Length: 297
View 1 (cartoon, helix red, strand yellow):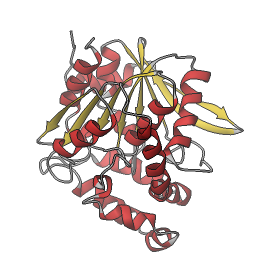
View 2 (tube, rainbow, N blue to C red; view 1 turned 90 degrees about the horizontal axis):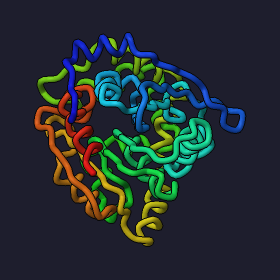
View 3 (cartoon, rainbow, N blue to C red; view 1 turned 90 degrees about the vertical axis):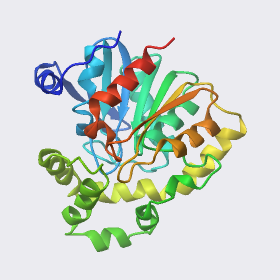
């Protein structure tokens, strides 16, 4: 039985919950994470240009339904360290050390949005059956046999250019990022100023901005890695795809096509009123789909 709560109660719960924010040291570097709730562990992975704050409306639904939620600052994109390599297999290895070595969880569920999705896929491919279910929110898997990952995404090519984006955007970070916050959502949604301010404060840091571009520059390696993974066959891990349809939402058809290429077990939903920022635009509906998926045998 899925228990949903009103957004107002959800936000109240956000303030009242015992939220434990901490650091885990990896090779003398610090990985920041927040953990809340008790129950089966769920790893929530954000993407660019956001931080774990993007989960603020969604994670209380998971906690209310007896899940333990782990929300790391993905390396390079927040308060965690800057990795040597930004390929998603390497990023996933850091998170595996957090979840399995430090927190001592055995098996987990993962929800990934934006870059969090490709990281989740690499995590599942390299963790020896420790990932039992995966949710991809408005993102595909690069190297799935199509060129869809970067289609209709002009910024992918721009961000991959070495050093030029940093030089061009320096001093204009707010102007540049606000374009994405304000134009990649559905027509009826405006991202809260508080959220934009938090993201802009984080990405005003030159190193974090550079790290964001490095995620895109690692795409050729990600594609090569995932092609090698697929040579071993599809995953049997169940996947749920959730797509926005409005604005720059991916749409469910393209996501289901990607899932069909990487797993034998998948399903998907499209949220017509949402764009790319699904967890902030329609958190209750996204939580409903996620919880129903998690509660299936």
